[in-house]
Length: 444
Image (cartoon, rainbow, N blue to C red):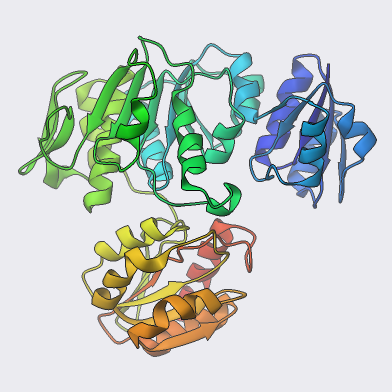
């Protein structure tokens, strides 16, 4: 079996290690630069690799290709592989072949990382040996190859779901579907919805589906799937059919087991985090976590980096890092949670965003706007009619300086960009780290 891995990041190198361990002849090809730690891993395992381009003869000779999720189907090499009918799968699909571990899988346009981390936190409280994988933690394939566990909590993007075929989630969590990544889906919302719903593939009567009952798309799409799995819908308040909800001042779950606790004890504030907490509790209880561990985990979870992360106060101004807000809906949730006037930092690589849904909140909550991107033209077109003070910036240093100049004591400077980060930064984490670094420099 000749297996080619396209892309040599965490996902690709993990897939290479697992494929080699299963006896495949492995070749790793990356059109860009391979990070030094991953080169060292490939060398340590004796896996052949190339960077800075693809050798078509070697790639097209593959019996199967594992494609890293960041590579679009429109990439020339992917198109050539499809023309030759070479099977293309994801790292998650590969890993699923070689383990019978219990899989708790989480997707959604927003809240994935928080909910995935919270589920894992609860299971750790319960003493359950689950790994953390997917978009966070180590590659699932690498863990299956070198550190197998009886279960995994896996954050899945739509890109990872696109190339999943036989993989099955024992517990599938779908938090919400709102416009995102439309540039990867032909600017067609239904294509994106179809990708998210793939998390239900192969589920049977012993499997569980946790979902937000109020989502615009999920209820409609669910009618297309056989009703053989256990359904665990949750809602903001008591609704017909919902098994998890807020009931007055009480966080309540009625199935798979009865559970309740005061809302005031939840560690994560805000309505969006109520939904994340309901989803996490339902998933953990479905996996067998005891009620005591669920309550303890919900009460002391510290949150995740780059998601409404309080940085520090400088000259009476609060600085909040929400770099994970890479779509409009995530920014909307961030603004809803703000209780002080906001200097909002927006911008980056636009993914087909429609900013109309956030305009009323910007008008209501924001004192000023700072645009941060290589090209801010679409932001000007969307927001300038609000007649708020605006600063145009193209680096994080200039951005933080501009935000500080516009803010008044008691305000919040909120980095919640609505956009991907790849125009000026390596990734979302790099953007958030640079923001925190520049803000903390102001303390000196």
